[in-house]
Length: 266
Image (tube, rainbow, N blue to C red):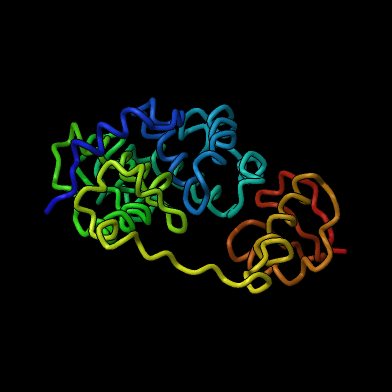
């Protein structure tokens, strides 16, 4: 049995979120969105997406920017190395032009199978599935794949599957009663999908104080021209390896390309 694509697309047309990148087929804003949405919720991405595109409306503009300036516009979104990967991807596009299918898009820095498929589908109309975590969860619970679609419908199907997984068929609080493809769903027929248990309070890893949190604070301090936060030494080697900071011979730390005044650890 195949998932009911017609019911899913009708539902998506009624309830889809007005995310701004859904109104364009320009591959650059779509790529910016997809890189930003890696490990970050779409609603949180919107202001950063708008900020980056205002500063760099084309790949050439992003490629010509200093790495530190790209980080300035990215800072606060998290996983700052994605911003530098986006800049490298922009440089590749500026030099070689846009790859126009998912297989070729994999050549861009920071672009994996899902991101390549998303850009190929949403910008270039390739009939390729954007298989992400939401897609896999919906299929695993329903016990059925959506049947192959012509390119004119594949992009909408891809968006609808992501919307369904993000808003209805969620990991911990699925809303089966609101699901447009509930009839015949294996998990719903069995009384509802199995939900992974939450870790006991006090055992879940905290973001505040983690290395990832500290890495972001180091970059933010450099952008602001402030002293580095206490404990910064434990993450500097990783930041340098990722190209997010540069260590000078005198021990000072700066953002790449030296466009900001260097700061010393404290």
